[in-house]
Image (cartoon, rainbow, N blue to C red):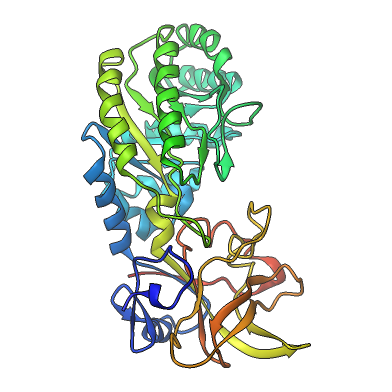
Length: 412
């Protein structure tokens, strides 16, 4: 039986229920909890990640490569799993680079983006011979100095801050003043300087936003990104070998949101690729995706410690909370707080339902995992599952807050 029979959320097509219990990766949630030895924990289903890649491969033209943005979830076992399915990896720190280098992905298929790279990170990236997405003129000059000192020729791409933004995006990464990349209008002068430096030009990285569920907006951004790359390539010191069109593919978190329709995106790229190949015949075209590949594959599970009633309202007090899952608490970018999909995972459809709030053990009213949700009636010891938790969960949370132990992470 699918979870849709028990949930108001349309966003959980990947999981089933067996005898009233959530099943993840072929195991009942009570079995997983017993194997983990304690709660809270994150559990990730590798089969969901595999199917998400398969969905993309089915609609995208073969010329479009897939890169996994490790920042979405850097758990080494997840990165290794996805490394066998995608065409490259994108990192945003030396720590993520270490994880990427532990996979079988070719060095030239690893790229490093992010403002404020330290000299140590640049040195590590140059030594690893990966592609470095430059975010400023100063970073370019630092790389040139490293090249002269080491006798190497670092591979570099220009991260472009476009003059457009990804509309209806959860986080806008381009358009207007941004700390990310180099303003499009400043790129020609930078390319002119780059031609005189001991750096190997590889291409452009154009990333305008994330978490978008409207295919027409993503299509527009891809078309504009390609047109911008065509224009900028005319001043490039070498042929474009890499064109990173970014990502932005979203997943549904809240009631009223629908799964992203991939068909029109694939159709647009099938039309766009021949134009790119005509203008930039040496370019390898990639999409950089993170949340879309791992977000729906993860479930955060905590245990009910206490059932409290305060002035008629039920509070399920758990051993989990915002210190483990900041995004689900509504404190990671939400303007108006909304509930993630949440279930009493070992008591699905087992009895009466009630309106309750799921809270954690922290001394702050912000520690809220579900606010006045309709849930199966829970008792002390029951397991609460928070879905859509595979991306920006564990590592995007203030794990040290109030010094509680961190959650366990499991890949099934």
